[in-house]
Image 1: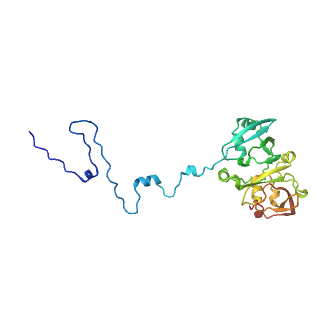
Image 2: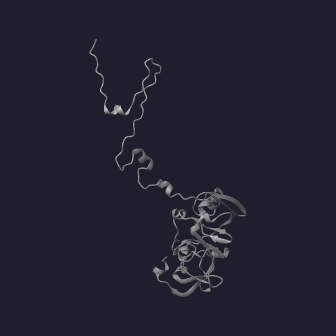
Image 3: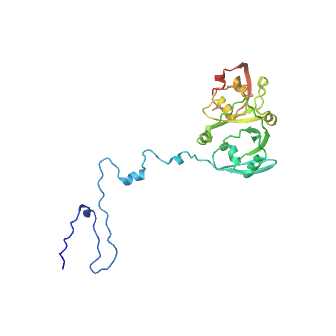
Length: 274
């Protein structure tokens, strides 16, 4: 018979667990189950690893970056008409009215057959821009037409708000006002495309609260640069005058005509200054 083995000494870890063994009669073959020990102490002022994991590894980051930029967009529907045919469209994503229309296969086919022409969208008898926010189109009927495009090489490109900026603004931050497509007698030609002036008498311009009238008109992109180079102002039927430097906040729903204050050209820096 070999030498008798000495029992193993219990180490520090053994006091944290108690082994459950089967009774001597061998009633169960289940492996021993270890009971959890008391909670290990943590240094004063620190947080346990489990709580740290639940809180997130980066302090101050409340939600992932890919969800921070997503803004809620209320689902809305509208109809659009082309060539005497009316179609329904439901919009579920924030963007421009042209982007919404492009989700329609029928519109895509129609636009493909009218390349090199200018898209004109009419709402309530007034022309809106192709980058008009779709959130302002609810329960209404649009008329879609394509006019002969005018390529003006000497014109500055329209200043437009990036789409990601539009999506972060709610419809409550927006105002719309209307503008006659023909100016007063001293500045009758104000529209880049004369065909639009022939077809439509008024156009609708959208603006964000806090910006100036000039900013909204420049972003719209349908006016000739004469409007900005000359000293122009807007007036209503009651002859109430609105200057280009005025804020748009109180002009929601107003209708204006552009007229010339004088024939002096504004300094270049002032003409294109927002």
